[in-house]
Length: 281
Image 1 (cartoon, rainbow, N blue to C red):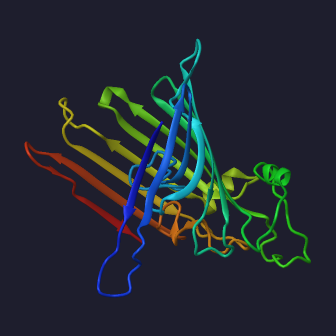
Image 2 (image 1 turned 90 degrees about the horizontal axis):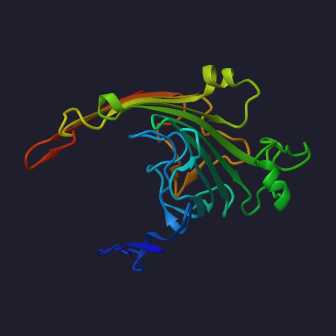
Image 3 (image 1 turned 135 degrees about the vertical axis):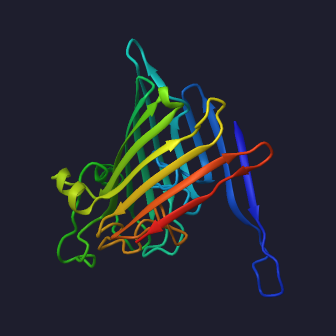
């Protein structure tokens, strides 16, 4: 069992808030293959080094309860391991509906200690004054969509929830000092035609990461390309999008955009340099 607390203080001659803010604070417990966490913490999903499509370090720490595997669980007799995560959190304002909830699910398969295949699912629902679901309907909403009747106030959205899904794959090249090649596709809601989501309105992340360029483990390079679809983060009912404390849960790039990012790590005898550059449209 472990705990962590980070407080943030403000001071000055103006009317600053004098009560310390809890930047992060959580309790974490591990028992065998199971890990449980409760509190305010950062949750990172996906293979990206610089950016994440669904949830990453761009957003503010999330108030959540999380249960996950404490380590990859090996499947006997075959070279496959499984990692799983499920969480429920409350999104901080500004939101269209105060106290909007967020559920998070992720499943990852590790194959032959070289390939990683993952899928992540975010669902935004409930909130004060928002569409209400019973407990059973809320569970079912994770697997199917329930539309609002045309006469209801949220007729523009016709949805009880806002959903984002991603699929990702990573290949680790052990023969090349652990270099990783990865790709992630994310999109809004469930698609009957996955190819259309990939071609027309998906969010794409592709990258290559060299953690060590020499035999001694020195120096590194990371290159990432993002392309964000025209309808990313848009929803008729939850018009605030998937944000927490005013920051997007995933990449902050915005709809209909792309970026190319490159960074290096230069390990000198008594100094480490991290130069980087990013082109954005």
